[in-house]
Length: 293
Image (cartoon, rainbow, N blue to C red; front, side, top):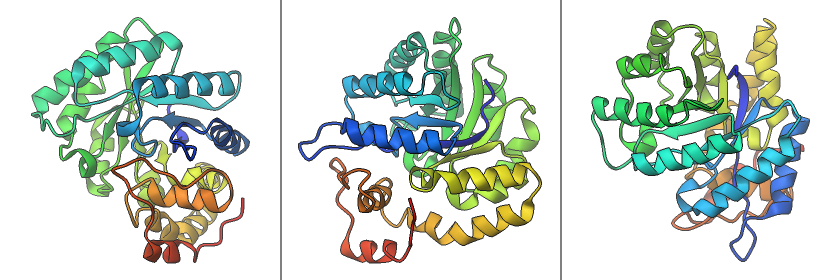
């Protein structure tokens, strides 16, 4: 499967009594489908995966697979953790369900060596070798305090079931180094909306986006304009939204994006502890952006 284009790191909407809000989830799904998003990824950082139970993650997966069946929008699922055996079990389950893309984050808190990272990702990818599922490596040292090195990424990219990388450092020099050394059939996507267009300009294949929860059509238009060599339109749109991209991280993701979705009656602004509701100061910043749904 070609991993390109705009993928949305989807939020997980909650009801006032703390359960997954299925009607809101379907509204989010439909927004993504209408915008012709390449894919969604459930149970990532934006989906508050640390506070989702295994049963909830499986429920989200089944709902998405059913909703997007037969459409052009692919389904991805965060199956990584800092427990290799646990990640193997969940990844194997997801592969059995037919989830095409498994997002596997660097192990957090443990702080493994590069050798440990190589073994961790290889073990997970080996566990799905008899399926059609693929692993997307997720490098986000701001969350995990550990980063894959360029050498480790290159080694992992040669695995038959590791097809892509979500690179969320926002470091374009590091991104360029990776893109220069991996083969052209290994997809490297940005995990950082504020550097999305510059990332495409150095050879990136797309983005796993937070902003596309709210403005999926805009993100798709930036990508499509760049791909059709309409650089002027891509640049104009990107610069129009750059302040918004940065504002989405004024507090811990996904607190700001959930607040904005709530203002358009898509879902409630609820997050699970230890995240807290958006502060009044941050609300005033976000209210400056006029977003049409």
